[in-house]
Length: 93
Image 1 (cartoon, rainbow, N blue to C red):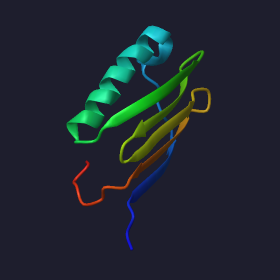
Image 2: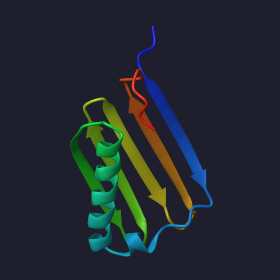
Image 3: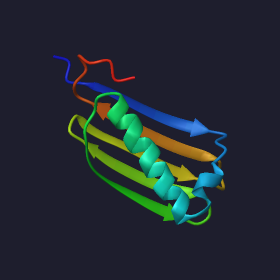
């Protein structure tokens, strides 16, 4: 029985955007991510974005199909990504 698609990524050598220089940039990031979620036909239920100075962020987004999370370590140029989507019958790319 297939219950969904689970993507887990360890991302090395990341160049964190100047968007992450301030809490204002986090607002821009929220809008962009929310629009991407909507564009692929998923439904965002809620989110939590927490900013760590400088350039680091942790994000958890609850979607009706499951979740998306992202955590960054700016000094190490490293990030993790976790996406689970249980409506695997749709093309959610």
